[in-house]
Length: 385
Ligand SMILES: Cc1cc2nc3c(=O)[nH]c(=O)nc-3n(C[C@H](O)[C@H](O)[C@H](O)COP(=O)(O)OP(=O)(O)OC[C@H]3O[C@@H](n4cnc5c(N)ncnc54)[C@H](O)[C@@H]3O)c2cc1C
Image (cartoon, rainbow, N blue to C red):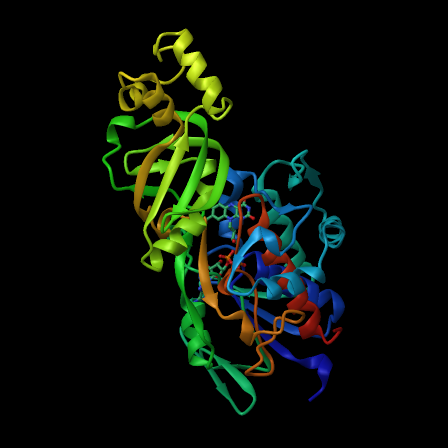
């Protein structure tokens, strides 16, 4: 078959699917590419991202920024992509990036919708067909070609994400497609998500502060994060909690015991805090929110010191997929070529983005992987790799 006239289907017009289509067409304008998208517009998740600002990428990234079944796969997949590559891609479509001091990056417009508008424009300029409101139900592989709801294609890219934030149209359909094509799937779990606490914390509702959170899994310290925490009506959220939540969620899925310890005043070590409490005669009013004082104050200054630095809560569950920013688990990456995103089981089949068993930390890393994998697959299907 002529390499230049291939018919290609991409399922999902999210970050990775759009990157894949635009990259492929730029390399090979002869390709006939159709993206199927169940929503009535492209990039709905991009629109909702970063509180409407879109933390579009992180300028530095490697496999340590991910929770993945196989970190080596992530390392290899990211090696073929760089911030410079992405920056150039963005400039070519008219998108100017704003790099912050902490290496997070946003569109200079500070609006996620400018990202979606420019990706959408690039798709139409490159002649990519986008079939909106087409919820793909069935994929079949027959005689070396792919049937997508009865339309035949030479190559197929599954970029349909996973189930976090289903209100934005997310689905786990990609996993059904993968299984039906002979792939193995690691069970999914919510990531970057608030945590439900076993002890009733409703009385702490609304308390927000900066604190250090330590995550214990089966009694072992696994992760620490220093940032905001926020007590909610279901448990606890805030940036520090989101940062440790993926490991907590994965452990809960495995049935491990999970608890967090919060250091409410991480700026003091134990001795300094003890001395300070002695100075103020165990009076905490000027040091902590009232609702927390009731929880940590004891007659003994030594015990109060300990309670402030080791406030413990058992974690009973996460706040669930609908409230999560991402999903862990997904298509096993041992069955995928990290350089091309092509299946090792079926030639011409590719997977990109969150549908794979790779989930990023907070800070733009999920989009980073979506762009990197979409870019790698785009080059591969164009025949330039
Ligand atoms: C509220 C929120 C905020 C976020 N903020 C950030 C952030 O600031 N930075 C960051 O790096 N990450 C962020 N993320 C995570 C990031 O959005 C995702 O990791 C990323 O979008 C994944 O890209 P993807 O292409 O793999 O999948 P998606 O972007 O989820 O795209 C998949 C597409 O496939 C479509 N689809 C699914 N099933 C079918 C089907 N059967 N037929 C047709 N179409 C289908 C879906 O409608 C969707 O449009 C955020 C996520 C959420 C929910």
